[in-house]
Length: 294
Length: 290
Image 1 (tube, helix red, strand yellow):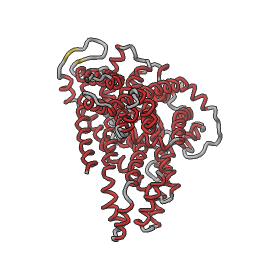
Image 2 (cartoon, chains in turn yellow, orange; image 1 turned 30 degrees about the vertical axis):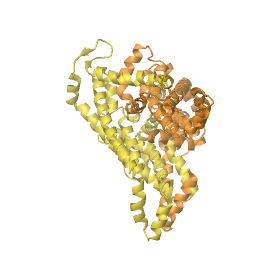
Image 3 (cartoon, chains in turn blue, red; image 1 turned 90 degrees about the vertical axis):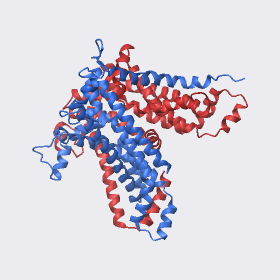
Image 4 (tube, chains in turn yellow, brown; image 1 turned 135 degrees about the horizontal axis):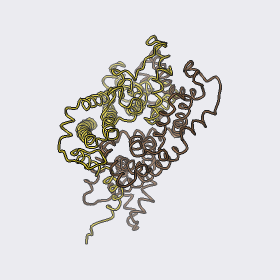
């Protein structure tokens, strides 16, 4: 006699229920609210795809998408390169175990800070009145103390300067993953190739970099997916400004929903962003799995 | 980790052919980057002791006098007592519930067989793709209806829901690796499944419980977007929100800003330094496996 087992379902139920109520249901709701004109308080008015049509011709939306794309590309490329560089220094360059141990610990410390504290701290670092960066730039002749640069106040450059704290924080993460990958490369490969007379550069090109590639894909995947969610750091430092210079999609959604109370329009942006994220994440994960299998 | 590192060094020492200049350059760079990494912390802590004039004139120097009175003042002005309490309560509840519910779900998904198993696992894992901004508006209206706005429960529920997918996945990958024989030997004695989970699986899975606890704690402790949206009154604010409000109110009271920042950052860094290996492992597991 076979009974339908209830037991496994009981174990899954609590987690499943929470996920359903606070993630599943809101996702479905997002798609529905996107079809309405709603200020969050009064009666929602069904407007169909009007929000979507408005969005497609809204320059602010496109600007936010462009900023998000720049942020995502910088995260995918710069954070991985930073981590890779540090990992090489820690694993090969230091050659003294004490130095490599200490620097590994130290370089990971920024990962402990919340993005809010990082934003607040770096806003102070960038602050032209406080002079930390001004003094530093003046010392190397890039700025004058009398007329200090306001790096986060420059519409053309703010997005790129706002990214510097992200490099400061996340390079340590890449370093740890790349260090582990470097340690995983079998010593025998280097020994064998040395006997064959391979130079350092050739070993790097034919052994180290190819075997490191899966880790590169992992780190950039993590950084790229994370970059789509970027909100805290930018919001704390510039709130999307000056103008819309650092306005990324997440800040636009927040602003539309909770500053000007366009709940329907904010949901429409969220839905479009969600679909873009799903497509890119799926592509990245498929690529990542393909790389890991070979 | 350090043993492995030693191996890597010896491997490249031969490869680099003992190139002294290369080693020297690398060491110098490493020291420069380590200083870059630490300098903002140093600046934060030393500036707390300085008056405004000192902060402007000697940003890189040590404070001329050591005056601790700024810390209690900043603590009071920033309302950090309440904020710490709120953060401790919400983080504790979130981590406890995520660890318990996610490990139970992963236990069934990894160690039992039942209909819909694969689909349920896929649903849990795919939950990771949803980011906070996507559901912010519907969650807000949901909490309005549940009358949970300005209540820590709103932050707690959303953080639990957002922690579950990755945690279930991490527990699952760990549980699935444990040999079947472990179960079979206890099943004969008629061990109920819950006792198996509690007395055998949990003690066997210490590392993954530690990793999930660590990254979930940091995630909850640092969470900003939900707290910003759902917690608007002073008495329910967590540390990140309270800090932001404080910075907006005391814009040019520099020493106090630095002091408040130091008081919220230093404890976490201290905990990290005390158990760095577990922290590095937990954080990378949380990010990489996702």
